[in-house]
Length: 425
Length: 183
Image (cartoon, one colour):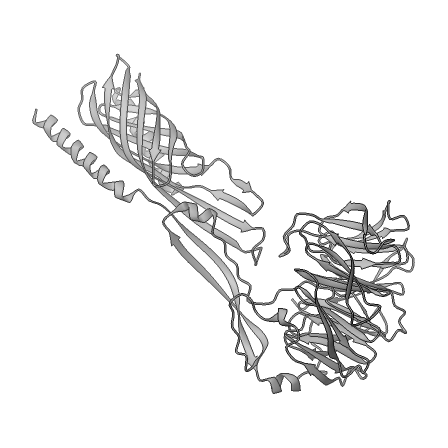
C-alpha cells in the first residue's frame, strides 16, 4: 500500500510540474545572418576636385557603363571613376589611366569633353590628351536622385571619396515564429548600379562618342540629355566646356535609360518606354508611350523599330524576361510587333540587321534581325554573365561580370574573341 | 545528437539481450495519436513505438509524424517505466531523438529555403489500462520540444546571395491516446 501511495504521489508531483511548464510553451527562433556594410571615407571638396585628373591606371574591379570615343574606351568603375583604355588595337587594349570621380555612374563624350556625374554634380572634363585630363566645369546639385534616400545622412561639408567595406554577423532571437515569415533585411548604403550606356552606330569620326543601351546620359547635337529617377534634363553644350541646364521635365517614375535616335529620345522606365521629340532641343515634348509590366528595360531604336528588353530578379522587380519589338511608324502610338522570350536580358545593341543582346548568364546572343517578326539566333557566346554591349565597325565591346570583352563580328559566321580585360577580383 | 540516439539505441539492444537471456523479455508495441498544444498552433501527431518489455520497464524505437509548424517525421528512442507491476499502472516515459522536416526544400516567389533536422524530445506521465490479456490503452500527458533549422536565401533583398539561418524551437504540451500490445 505504501508503495502505491509513494508512486501516486510521485506521479502527481510530476503531473504538477508538467502543468507548470505551460509557462514555457513558447515558440521561438534565432535568426543569424551576415552582411556587409560600408563606411564612407570622406575627402574635402578641394581634395576631390584636385584628384580629378589622369592618375595611374587601376585594375578594373566593378565595371559600369562604357563610352567609346575614337580609339579610347571610357569605362566607368562604379562609384569610383573612369578607366581610360587605349583601344587603338582592339586585340590588345591598354589600360592607360584612371580618372578619380567619386560617385560616378554615368558618362558621355562630345568632342574633347567628357561629361560625368560626381554624386549630385555634373563635371565637364577636357580629355583632348587622355593622359592629362583637366576639369573645366562643375554644375553642382543638378542630380538630386543621387541623394541618399535610405536614411543615410552623409557629411554634406565633404565628399564621399570611397567606401570601406565591413563584414558583420548578427544573431537575433524572437519569441514568435510567425515573425520569421515576414521580416526581411534590406541593406543598401552603397549606390548599386548596373552597367550600361546608349548604342547608336555613329561613325567613329563623329564628334560624339558611342554609349551602351543602359546609359542615363545621351548627347544629341548641342545638348546633353540626362535622366534621373523621374525627370529629363537638357544641358546646353554649345560651348562644350561650359555646360548649363536649359530644361527639366518630369517624365514619369523609375526612369532608367535614355537612347537618342534622330530627333527623338527613347526613355526606358520600369513601367514602359517614353518617346520624346527634341526637334526643339529645349522643348521636351512627349510624343508617344508604350507601357509594359513592371521591369527593368533598356531600349534602343532604329528607323522603324524599338527594341526593349525586360528582365526580372532586380530592384525593378517584375517576372518577365523577354525582348519586345515595337513598330515606330506612328511614334505617337508604338505598337507591339512581337515578343521573344529570353533568360535575363540586359543591354543590347544593333548594327545593321544584326542584333546583339546581353542575356545575363547565357552570355551574348547574336540575332539576324532582318525580319523582326522572325528573329534568327545566329550564335550564343557563353561562359560569361553579360551586362551591356556596344557594336561599332565590326567590333563588339561587351561588359561582363568578369571583364571587358571585344569580339570581331565582321564575319558573322565566324565571330571571334579579340581581347579580354579581366577584373582584378 | 546523433551519437546520443545511437547510444540509447545500443542501450535498448543490450537491455533486450540481457532480458532475453533471463527469458522474461516480451515484444511491446504502442500506436498513438494525439495533438500538440503550443504557443502558436494546435496540431495532430502520430506515433508508433516498437520494442521490448521487461517486468515494469519497456524500451523501443519510435517513429512519428509531428505537424507542428513544419511537418516533420520523428525518429526517437522511447523508454517507459511503470509505477506498479499490475496489468494497469501509471507510468513515466521519456523519448529523445531527431525531428526531420518532410519537405527539405521549399521555394516561393520571395525566397528559397532548405530545412534540416533538429533535436526532438518528449517527457511525461501516463496511465496504462489493460483491456485484455495483451491489449492496453495508454493515456499520456507530456512536455515535448522540437527543433528545426532553416537556411533561407531571399530572391530580392540585397545582397541576394547572403543566406539567413533560422533555428526554431517549439515547446509544446502533448496529449496522446494509444493502443498497446504486449506479446
